[in-house]
Length: 205
Image (cartoon, rainbow, N blue to C red; front, side, top):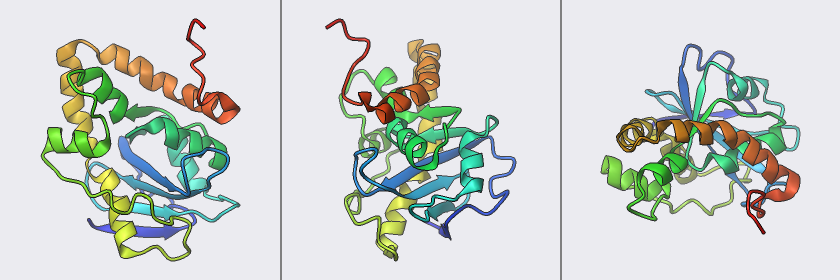
């Protein structure tokens, strides 16, 4: 997939006028607070993917931070809870407003337990995705072409998935419930950052 790699930050005004942007990230692991944020991928509804290789540990990326917090731009994720928590911890920003295709899938596709990006993309769009680079070294100073292609592909289909899932949410009468979940997602991420990632605070016991 066509992509552009940026070092440190996005160019100013790159997504000017965009109503929504697909977002993903790559990290050194899956533990917020332990594993550094390395790369952020973004794509408007059309065009190239833009990959930001972050400058660690300063994370001085004002244009990226402004986009993530822009109230006029919807940020579309798959399993946004993790990315949003990483952005809160590493970048110091609360990402909003947001949409999560994994939450939408869980609410709309109750006939299956397969809600990973690869599975949802295959069923709803007929597109096969490779996950071969998922566990590679994202902290490397020089990322390989295979890593860059993998990272770009993760934001390629999110707009199309949102459209299909929105149709299913309407059909099942769960659009408002999904929106309430999306609105809560930055707060769920804040709980993760604060140490409640493995605790269901709503549970009775």
